[in-house]
Length: 186
Ligand code: DQA
Image (cartoon, rainbow, N blue to C red; front, side, top):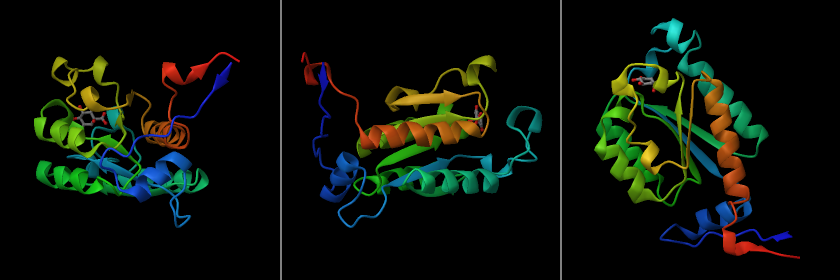
């Protein structure tokens, strides 16, 4: 059985990004950019409900993501905002510029049609992350507007979820999953 790697079609993505996604490297041999976005109240990690979110700060997670990204040949940009519109702006600006997006939208996960629509518009693979297992918590946290448009979702592993998300994106970028028609009997 042979498995062909499926190059992704351009779909309005800038050629440099298409190249980066297909090869894992950009034309200039710079590593693909992964944007890690964090929503409201995540700036308070470390002191905010540590029994749920742990004692690590967002700066700790930022540093761990950059370290892990560098080892995996990825350039990680890490940002946080308490403002829905700013998150939407950053998602829009990711189009054609970044190879993947890790998103912990915080409470906007459960409320934001605007973030859902922005994610649909940019055509960048998204991995949704939550520190806590949102399905074990209050019913209003069970629905996610992000999941609908994400490649996948990781929740309940604390800050390690960000690392798992980087690994998932790294794999997706370097070898997009084959479609059934790409699989040939030897
Ligand atoms: C969270 C879960 C959300 O329900 C909550 O509003 C957050 C953090 C998490 O990482 O577990 O702010 O996204």
